[in-house]
Length: 199
Image 1: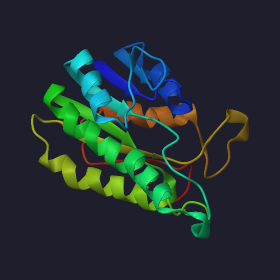
Image 2: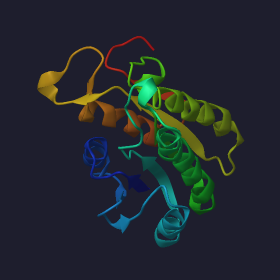
Image 3: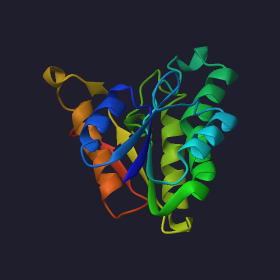
Image 4: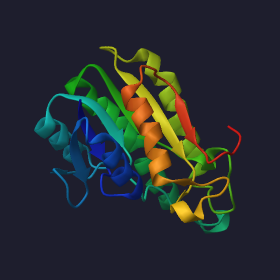
């Protein structure tokens, strides 16, 4: 398969690249380097990405740095807008602008996070947006044309293998959920890489 991997140089993206590159053609996308350079929050940059790659079989968005962590009293309108643009709207836009270029039966796999269900005092501008993009995926997946599939991976915090404990996951463990989404036949699923926490 020809797979677009956004966030290819991040912790999760690097592990996904390693897990998929032996059997698939990976188009590495990053904001500063990659096979294609793209700011996934910029519509014109995203349009350039798809016109450059043209037809594809799968897209993964594993971009990081997509929200602000502050206490409730410190958060501003701009903090909420920042998270909304990067966590929610930019991933929605990838689906909207990418669908015309997606082959029949292609898949999109997005990224949310476990703070939708396990909040803390600094996740007010993050957890609700995870829940929002999860809901978008579940509601939109049945409506897509051409047999296109849409799924979500929701990771817990990523740690090194020697730091593994309940409620955290390694990048390699998380990558396996993206592999399942790419190589499976399901749609509208939230794959929860929560390190053993109840889902």
